[in-house]
Image 1 (cartoon, rainbow, N blue to C red):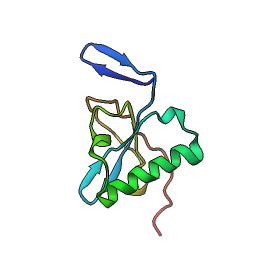
Image 2: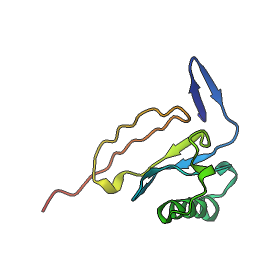
Image 3: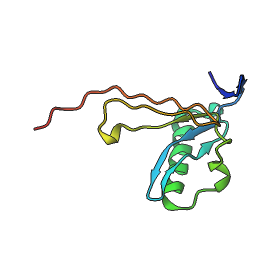
Image 4: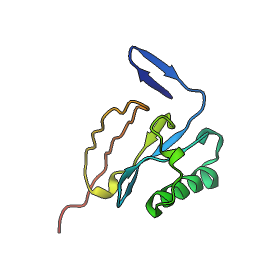
Length: 108
């Protein structure tokens, strides 16, 4: 479901404006790829996600795509931190769902 909770109401969206959580030296940034549902996975969406992540890390991201109200849904990948469980909070502009279930190899 592509929606926001706004007080006592739910606002539904017809288009997906996909936010991507990007870890940078300056902290977490969430750039948005607008109309992501119109893009094919390869090469369209994957290329756009790589470009906005690179712009965030390089310091050249357009501030307009960082506005918290820009995204309707946000994804992240926290697997590189080695954790087993991920818990997330609610941010007003979009509901952020995160979860992680995977097996880590035992320490040697």
